[in-house]
Length: 139
Image (cartoon, rainbow, N blue to C red; front, side, top):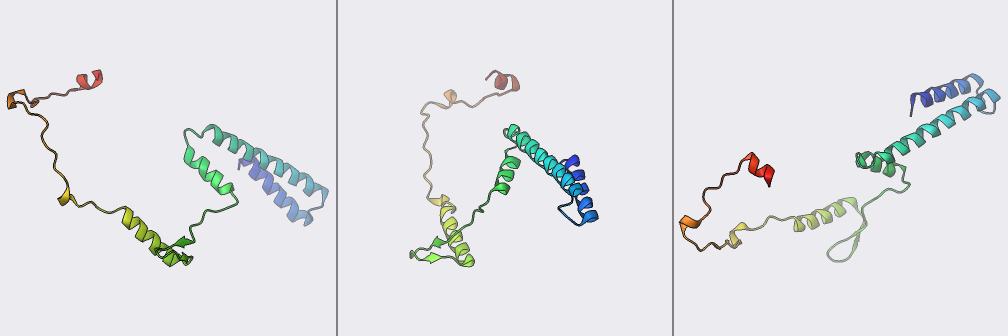
């Protein structure tokens, strides 16, 4: 909210506290002004964030998610036997077992070694390579 919108809301709250009636003409006038300023501030924020989407995608999508009515939830899941799980602890165990099976460390003792492709003499091998800034810039 902008500072103008905040002051308009404060005026609305003071008017309500003074009259204790939301049908009083003075309160209605102040409430309409506050509502207009809030809508204008919201519209300006949304247009600014859509113009800035290329630079700041994180805040744009965070705002979009906050305005969404539905929340994304996990579950219910199916375990190995095919039964449905809705208990959060059991779902966590099923997800943990799944990710553990996907992200395992490889056994490097069984890895195949690469064989030499170069079949020339040692004098023809590329042993002395110099790389400097000029060569990198040129490339």
